[in-house]
Image 1 (cartoon, rainbow, N blue to C red):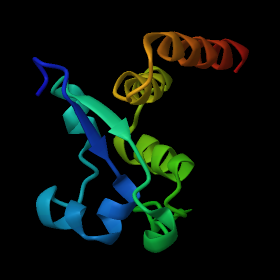
Image 2 (cartoon, helix red, strand yellow; image 1 turned 90 degrees about the vertical axis):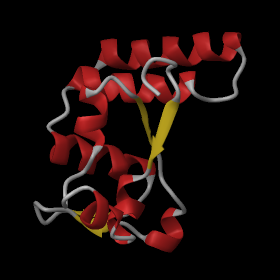
Image 3 (tube, rainbow, N blue to C red; image 1 turned 60 degrees about the vertical axis):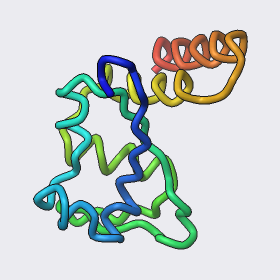
Length: 116
């Protein structure tokens, strides 16, 4: 997967609710391990209205929408700002948008980060 840049869609909030994390990843969010192994990870919400998020190991409630997936994963995996930007860019690079659209979205991410 890493050698070919095949993206992995990861939905941390729904994975927590479905007990995927506790059953298959020793209770830990797997994103840190996936990143460290050089895999192309994207963070996503998986039907947030149905799964309605979770309470993380720090006691913070997450609603399951994309921002909550980023916040909970950033905390649980000690992600850096650069890693969060990489995850966002991975999402665009892994989508079915045109090269021109990709260039535009990358520029918007860069503008946002520069203004932050």
